[in-house]
Amino acid sequence: MSKKFVEDNLTKYTDEELVKFISTSPPLTLADDQDIQLLSTHLVAKPVVGESGHDEAAALEQARKLGIRAPAVRRLVPGKGETFYIVMDRVFGRTLRDLWPDLSWWRTLKLGLQLRGFVRKMRLLQSTTAGGLASGLILSPHFDDLHGPIRRASPMALTGYMNWWLINCRPDQFQPRTDLTLRPLAYHVFTHQDLTPRNILVDKDDQLWVVDWGYSGFFPIFMEYAGMKASNMPFIWGAGWSARLARWRWYFFRWISTGSYPQETTAVREVCRRSNFVKTMSRYL
Image (cartoon, rainbow, N blue to C red; front, side, top):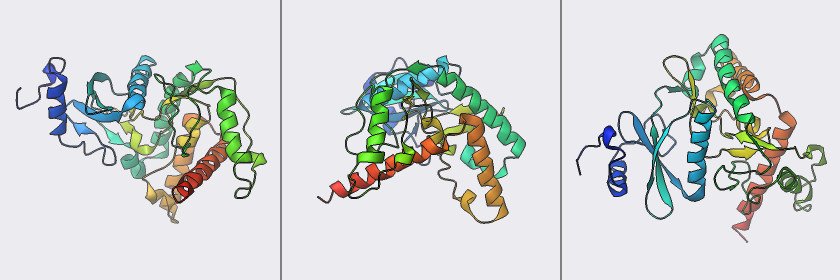
């Protein structure tokens, strides 16, 4: 095996050879809060586990078929146990998180319209079952309990799951939130679920790219809006005018991109809060 990885030989290397190359590769500095290795100038490798990893690879391929700018998957490489690696194209650009302090309102609008176009294309892909594209496993940052929704849950079943947390869960500890009761929709739509500023990149031509599709799958339409959190941007929560303007621009960007679902988002976050509390308390019982 050559001591240096050669991109043109990607399909010729054995799985064992690629794992060795990946294990000795440096981390991608752009992904400072993600475990991604810089395999070469144009390729990166992301470790994933089990069925959710196959869901992410399938979502990346589906996104590109829809015309969404997302990394192209080049190879899946088995690792140890249930771990394997998604080798994909590297996206050159800056994260929206890094760009945000200096973005004008006009540029915010243009980027928001690009993301809106992506989201509209994704919502054309519909399903009567929820979850990952390959496995049907429902992986979400909003469902943080020990026993999440069933695989491939119907709109009725998934809504019932969330309403149970809102209305019926431990009445001795939680007040029923009948005001947040959700109604089942006719179908789920293809959803990224994690459109945070670190997962949105802008290249040198001001073209927007979407990365990290680990939570993607079929979900209620409002889950995209609920997942657009301004994480890792503490500077927008200050009291000064610059922070306020940055915060208002984020609200504007989110609204342009996904529409507005404030009540449903409140319900989803209450489900997350309650399920996380129960999960934490169960560790001490």
